Image (cartoon, rainbow over all chains, first blue to last red; front, side):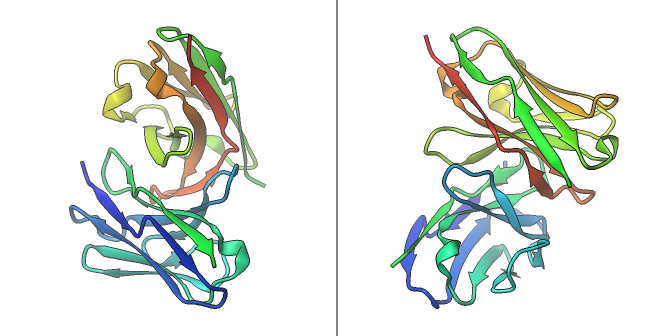
Length: 107
Length: 118
């Protein structure tokens, strides 16, 4: 199975900060990497797919990038509504596997 | 508007069965692969199973193989998850999700809670 190692597990940042969350894949997953945002009591929301593509309706302050087996989600200027847990997901091979999640809190 | 509405959850005893449903609307259901994803209380997301658009192919995580069955009724635009021999570790919120043509999850239901306890 492909392991997705996500870091950090939690972080606290100030409004306006640039924030980066990373997932490392244990095998080649190409660009089959998505990022999801989940707020308390809510369903996951797709933010990024294909490693770098912004999902419909997602603010442009969110972006995705790839460097080798490392995939990153960046928020260019943190807003209060971005407080949530973020998960990565590889969908190149079954079983699909999620990262363990990053809890993002606002200072 | 794409909508996915799960139903059928609740409290069930260990070893018993439960069937979840996911009613889809707002898109051509039989054009899309569909999946179930679960989330144990206070835990992360786990993929459970996927079924192809025509039901000809199914995929499962190891921990549910032989116990869970994913199926669909394209005439009713409904996805199902039959869960047999339930265990306490199956306690979770179960989400149905749509996969786009590149197998990226795009839409999710609101989730349904399943509690396995005596």
